[in-house]
Length: 105
Image (cartoon, rainbow, N blue to C red):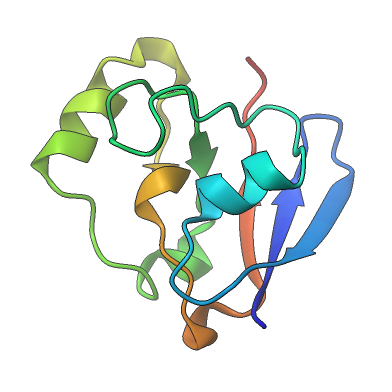
């Protein structure tokens, strides 16, 4: 099973195994990763699963669609290069070792 590394705001790391086909947000919620709420259940409508994807992983995930871009725009000051909604990041075997930063919020 592929793994995801969550870099928490205090710089500690939590690594969890995620089933292929599951969103990074769903896995984070199920494992109690702090800072990932997933209030809207994964419909890209709330921004409570905001993560920052390091540049080295950018080409390994599909680009954000228009709905995700619009939600990220609503985050205002929290958005940085690499900002993504973890509900839109779906695990595949090729993403094993994916690292995401959870912004301070």
